Amino acid sequence: MAAETPLFSQAQTLENDEAVREVRGIMALRARGSAPTALVRTYGCQQNVSDSEKIKGFLAQMGFSFTENEEDADFILFNTCAVREHAEDRVFGNVGALKNVKRRHPSTLIAVCGCMMEEEKAAERIRSVFPFVGLVFGTHVIHRFPQLLLRALTEEKRVFERGDDSEDREIAEGLPVRRDGAVKAWLTVMYGCNNFCSYCIVPYVRGRERSREPQAILEEFRGLVRDGYKDITLLGQNVNSYGKTLKTPVSFARLLRMLDEIDGDYRIRFMTSHPKDLTKELIDTIAGGRHISHHLHLPFQSGNNRVLKEMNRGYTREQYLDLIQYAKEKITDLSLTSDVIVGFPGESYEEFLDTVDLIRRVEFTSLFTFIYSPRTGTRAAGLPDPIPAEEKSKWLRELCAEQEKIAAVRCASSVGTVQRVLVEEKNPKTGLLTGRTDGNIIVDFAGDPAFIGSFAEVRITSARNWILGGELA
Ligand code: SF4
Image 1: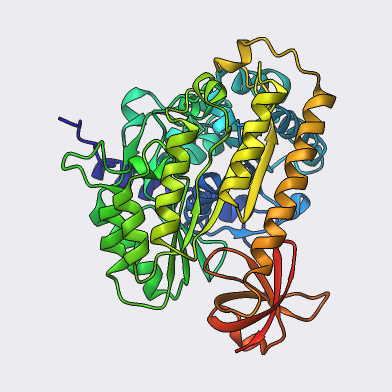
Image 2: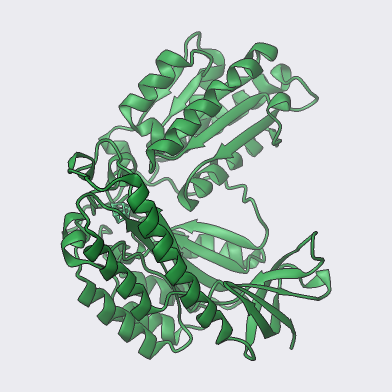
C-alpha cells in the first residue's frame, strides 16, 4: 500500500504565525525606507516561480513590499536552479556581485535558496566564498521560511538549512501565495520525481514523488477561478504519475476531470508530462474536457531507442509514436510541443537522425531544444562523450531548421480558422494585443485593451513561423 504523505502540522503553522509577527516588528525598525522592501529573483522552471510566489506570500504577510532594484531592498533572495551547470555558474557570479550592495547597505540581508542549495557542494561554496550571504535554505524547508528568516535576523551567526528525510515527505498546505500575474496562475499538484533519467539532477534536489490530496488542489483551484484567473497550469515534475503515493490513489486523469467540472470561464494546462506514464485515459479526458487545453507538452528527448535506454527514459520511440497517433485521432486540433536533447554522450549522427525523423512524423508546433550538458552527480556525466561541441551545435542547427519548416506549415494551416485567444497584454512596440490560443500559440491582433485578461474570438489571417496574426471575429 502507498505510504501516507503527512501534512504540515498545526504546531508548524503556529510557529510560522509567531515568526511572521516577530519579523514584521523587527523589519519595521530595521527597514531603510518607511516600510521593508524585498527583491526575490527566480531562476529556472515554473516550479521555482511557484515556490517564489509562496515565499513572497510570507514576505507580504510580514509587511514587505517588492522591488526589482537591489539598491532599494532590505532583503534580497535568489531562488536558484540546479538543472544546468553553466546556469549555476551564472548564479554564483550574480551572488558575488551582491558583495558591493552589502558594502553600501550593511543592513540588507542576503539569502540564497532553491534547488542549488540542496546540493551540498553548492551550499558549501556559498558558505566559504560569499560570507555576506546570511541565509541559505533548500527546497524542502520553504514552508518554514518565516522561522528561518527570523533566525537569520536575530541569531549572531549565518543560517544554513536543508530538509531531512522526514521533511522531504511533508506537504505544507495553506501557505500564503502572492501571485505574479492576475490572469495566469501556477498550481503545484505534486512534488519531486522518481524517474532518475540519467542526465537529470532533479530527483536528487527535489526528492521523491509526493502528491497533494485532491481536496486541497480542488480548494485552491476553486479559489483561483473565483479570483478570475483564466489560465491555470497544474505543475509537477511528472504530472502523469500524480496520485500514486496517496493513501487512496487517484489518477491524474481523474483529478483533471474533477477540476474540469468546476464551472467558470477558464482553461486548464498541465506540465510536465512523461510519455512513460501518459495514459489513454488521460488523452480521452483531454478530448472530452470542457476547459482542458488541447495542448500537450510531451518531452521525448531522443528519437533513438538505444539513446532513450541510456537516458533511462522507460519508453521506446514506437511507444511514443503510438501515443501520439492515439492522441491525434482523439483530439484533432491537438498542439504538440516537446523537449529534445541533442548530443547525448555516445550519440552518433545516425542516431541523431532518428530524432529528426521523429519530429517530422509528429509535426510539433514548437520544440525546446538543448545540447546535452553534463550535470555533476548524474550517471550520464560519467559516460564517454567523444563528439566535439562544434559538431553537436551543427546537429542542433539542423534540427532547428527542420522544426522551423514544420512549425511554419503547422501555423499556416490555422489561417482562416477562428481561435479562442486569451488576451495577455498590449505590445508597446506594435500597439497590437497579444494573446495565446488554446494550443499555446501566440496571436497578435488589433483590438481594445479592455480585452486584456479575457478570451476573444480571433480569426487567423496570417502566420509568421510560430506567431499568428488575426482580427476580431
Ligand atoms: S522525469 Fe526525468 S527529466 Fe523529468 S524531472 Fe524526473 S528525472 Fe528529471
